Length: 251
Ligand code: NAD
Image 1 (cartoon, rainbow, N blue to C red):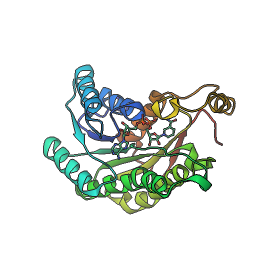
Image 2 (image 1 turned 90 degrees about the vertical axis):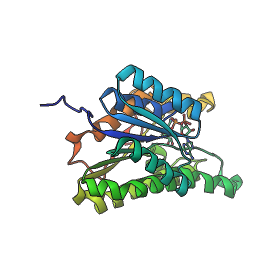
Image 3 (image 1 turned 30 degrees about the vertical axis):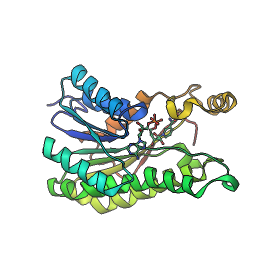
């Protein structure tokens, strides 16, 4: 019997895998034996991450450039990934941005950009991989949402909408592709220490810890551990769920 939660023989695409949560996910999947495609716009960091994973875990990796909000760019990336690895088994829709602001002051461009990257990006990548995954009768799609999508966050109408949208997308797609051996799930992180949250005012950070029963910020590794579980073969009867990884912040 193979090792519990092993990803040996599988290939994963991780969008936004160059740094932060995406990088931790890419590394953790590699550590479990998966070949990893790191997709990002920041190519020096993406290549560094891919090389590190290959060196540390002895798995094949690649760094590919794609803007997830751009359908043509995503199609080209998926074509290149399949040409190199033959089959993609796991897709992690992790690339995401924030452009915060109260609704009275939010620019239309900031609304559009957040929805285009966070929500349409997951649509573009999932659509590009749906046919090959259905044909191979196996797939794991994991969408990185947020507690802001579950509970709503003032100052983040754009971001909360995109992340709540991902939860509906997850459930709808899970129903469409379940019969083909493909599971679709969401992970909703709470407050995780990354570049994205580094700039927040101290009082917001302190308040977040107070609201978290586990009494600390999450780490990118906390999220990666949950993703690795859902990405494994053993999770084949789990689909359409949102796994909150937030130290109990939202319940
Ligand atoms: P990050 O900014 O450190 O990393 C995001 C990565 O996505 C970057 O490498 C960036 O270059 C890439 N990216 C951005 N736009 C892209 C595009 N159009 N195409 C391809 N790549 C693109 O952020 P993070 O904190 O690691 O966040 C990762 C995910 O987790 C995001 O979806 C975010 O919304 C979500 N999340 C983060 C937190 C948190 O507290 N940090 C909480 C909940 C959810």
